[in-house]
Image (cartoon, rainbow over all chains, first blue to last red; front, side, top):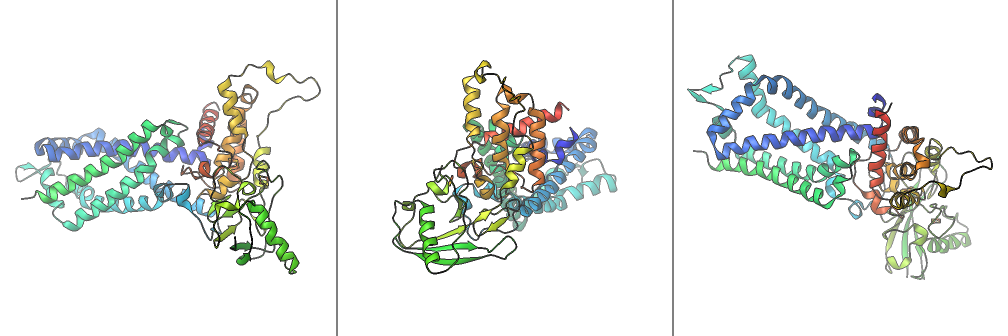
Length: 224
Length: 248
Ligand code: SF4
Ligand code: FES
């Protein structure tokens, strides 16, 4: 079994496995974020649960971080190897004749998403870790009420940040438009080649990022 | 029609090549692309210049030799054809046509438009065969029942002519469509299944060794393949490799 992950196909499979994991995570993150629009109290409670549950914090969170880092590093390794496989490029190349823009530019959409994740960590993750594990405040409270919803609203006050988020999610959609069905193919499944699955993939790739955009805009416009 | 050609000229494998402009006149739209190249070469020979070296053999779309990257596409703008099957009616009078060799580290240029594709042969030698006793007591092929579906799919995979357009087209210079087809044509048939695990392992290992890139499922190969080899063959190869690794 060990040999397979040293092969080109093994790297492909590893990319796909981490991609599936990240797509499931994204869905989960989206569902919780939607609560902030539907019902702030529920959003607070779920956030508190996610932020303090040991299974989520000590098992799922490290696995997630590993998944993200792995997907990025592997993406860069593949890009370098693939560039090496063609040292002299064509004087004229008509890529649009046979493939989508999304499929040819996964490295660039991925880099935008990576930049976004750095921003997102600075915005939310580092302050969380600081409050909980450095200052040791696991209560989730501020001035007698849950702090999560309030913090979220505050972050989306800045138009620059909202704009950055919107741009990042557009690139996430582009990344997913190729990535969703591509992951099936890499796993050796032809499911991604079926019309129904392609439509499902398109729906996922558009609805989830669009949902995140709507949530960000909602909080930006609705802050009092 | 009158055309301007921008052609990659390279003296030998060590030389630094460059694009050179040529003019050809009175090209008939009924000519094949290679016939147009013949006209150019006659012109060059008559004027004492070195003709453009390009690979060709059958000139009917079965040998896979006529590798040319024309106007940014493997075998030019038409679909399901090799360069020898490409007609000049696909172009217009006054067009400028860019002609380059396959570009891939694993396919080094030998001269002008001729590239070395022996990497494909080494991949074949690594497992693209079945071991049978040919000492005179070979079994009749029809003695083994094979479903119509499997036979058809194996035949479709076997139509790959090893032209290398998939590699040339792929932004990653991946050879997975070719190797996928070669793995599939055996994996689908009982005669091939006996050695399936070793075959896929060895062929994939050789493919990686040759320096082909990693497939990212852009699907460009399938579009440009003159024989319509399906991307499903790559998925099958991936499954075969997973199966082989699990059975270790
Ligand atoms: S898979 Fe198609 S493009 Fe690739 S070598 Fe075979 S025939 Fe040529
Ligand atoms: S010369 Fe044989 S396929 Fe074109």
